[in-house]
Length: 240
Image (cartoon, rainbow, N blue to C red; front, top):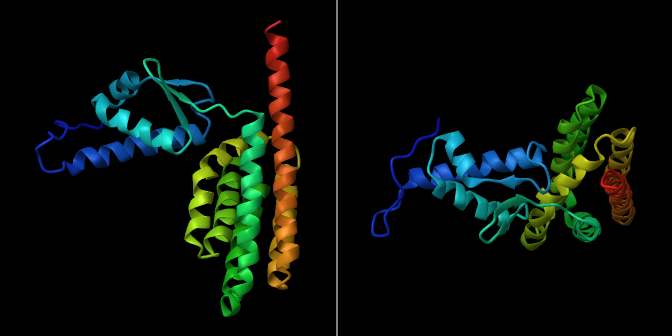
């Protein structure tokens, strides 16, 4: 049970225990949302979270605000917090932003020069981990490694603003990956597409790498949209 004696008074020195607890609650709720344990549209009751963890509501409230800033939670005044529920336009927007940001990041790899060998080696190591997860049928691990690979491509650009733009949407993008995880053959197809991207980078054909990456994300977008529409249609039929 997580315990804290009191919250910091306005005129007191910062209580770093409070802020550490706040971050712990944030990480706890974030993991539950990304893992699908908390479903889209599900209400997160602050008093229940606080009671279950044996803490006061204040660190839970602050954690919820951070999750709202991440785009994972929507807080409605006098109602409470809810896990974000992404719609069709959200799905399109997220993948289109990813295509723009990640595609440009790949083009920037052209200026890496002598670092290219290390970058390709790192990418192939990530691909090997992804392949192991695919063979094991561990789709949750596949999603985590897939995020690692795409984030590595962006971070390797060394463009701080580009990285910041990517990070603002990656949590929501992870939620969308969960929607397409059970599509038969999708993970093996992603493995092939990832290899095509890395091969193009290795041969220094950065235009081809950008094109392959954009096509990869376009395919994912269409798969997620298909799953979203199927779920929507099933919900409507169930309500008739």
